[in-house]
Image (cartoon, rainbow, N blue to C red; front, side):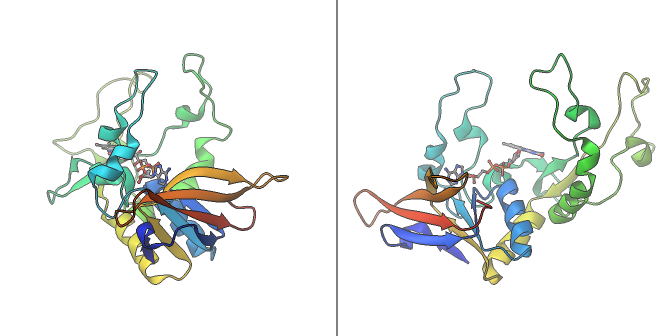
Length: 237
Ligand SMILES: Cc1cc2nc3c(=O)[nH]c(=O)nc-3n(C[C@H](O)[C@H](O)[C@H](O)COP(=O)(O)OP(=O)(O)OC[C@H]3O[C@@H](n4cnc5c(N)ncnc54)[C@H](O)[C@@H]3O)c2cc1C
């Protein structure tokens, strides 16, 4: 079920096994996977079902490194998150994204890449990539460019030690968004609270778990903000 946080009473409390903050592709994927395993899931989304300037303005922030895009322009606060900004034109003129897995080298420690080196290898992700492709409606064909070569599209004629030609696969947001919306609409254990901004994670004293999240929503019917506590049980917060 979808619920607008503005319809909750002040200091309402909601309970779930797992609270997921944000309904972008990461949150929706996690919600579907854990929801299908039977957990009570609450996806808490700051934005509404569509983009509006009030919610979008909450993304405002200062980039102290000078290396990042302005988050108000480069992120989207709404159901589906930044998927709403995907801008690759597909064959049917709809918009979507490029999909490609990370390369093995992306996981390796490289002296010239600060903070490089992941605690697991690309090979360990392979089974999860297969599941992600299915969820996103992306074909399971190879990404090796040689297999896709035809008269018009050729691999770069460079030694493989210098350059590798790979392909992106293009897909719309529809598969992921539709499946997630349907699950939230029909299932009893996967819910989404929207226009609900998490402002605090409150730890359970004496354990390593988060006891509850504090959430604020703007409510035009009242002066000021209304709040809610979201509690999650178990150790899977
Ligand atoms: C123009 C554009 C084109 C892109 N094209 C591609 C592409 O072709 N291929 C590709 O792989 N990637 C692409 N990306 C990047 C991709 O969209 C992001 O990597 C992806 O959306 C990140 O997913 P996410 O779920 O982590 O975060 P997001 O999609 O940003 O979602 C985060 C969600 O969390 C919510 N949220 C944040 N804070 C709170 C809070 N405190 N309380 C409650 N909710 C909160 C936000 O409202 C938002 O809905 C593109 C991005 C842009 C801008």
